[in-house]
Image (cartoon, one colour):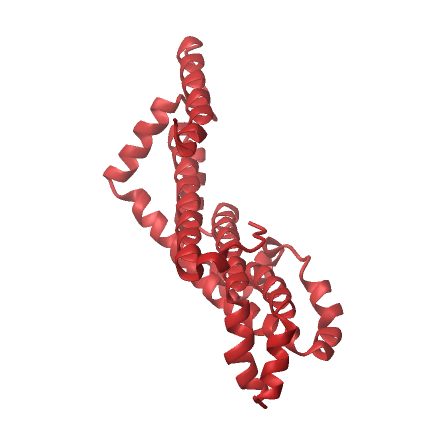
Length: 254
């Protein structure tokens, strides 16, 4: 019996093989495409001179810092809105007016205020990460078992104790899912900002390869970003199952 994970590799490997045969057959000469073998060699060379590692460090530093900042803000507001429905009604119009604004649309303002570099990228990533954490944590708080809230009232817990001792532990598996979703968004937005305007990280390296007519390196960097994203999601998924066990089997929007 072939494991399911091995079966999942059959289609992408077959596609790569077909692309390699086609590229070699037509003697591909392109500014935007390259054979898989050339992409693999370019990726190996990028690791060899360390360029890809420094670019990865810059991108992940901005993505994770923005995730932590935006996640903390979103979590705080999400819990507050889930607990206090009056506050939720007061903030509803404001949140729904700001939430649809694309994070990339803030680039001109952030560039004027913060200039190039980490700070601008972190602010844009944080803005993008606030909303999924806020929306999902608010929903998680509202779905806490009502009997738990009744128990907290019977025990005469203060509102703060009710949040820390009852609501957060009960909602934590779903809140973790929110951070999993935000982590993917953080990586996407960080690379997008670098491609658009910020001269650091993997996004800037992709643009440099494209402008230098190096399609093999450009595609190798895209492949590496995909590997990072897959590894990040797999690691968070494993952590979720290890931390919460059966409670991790919640409806997962990711």
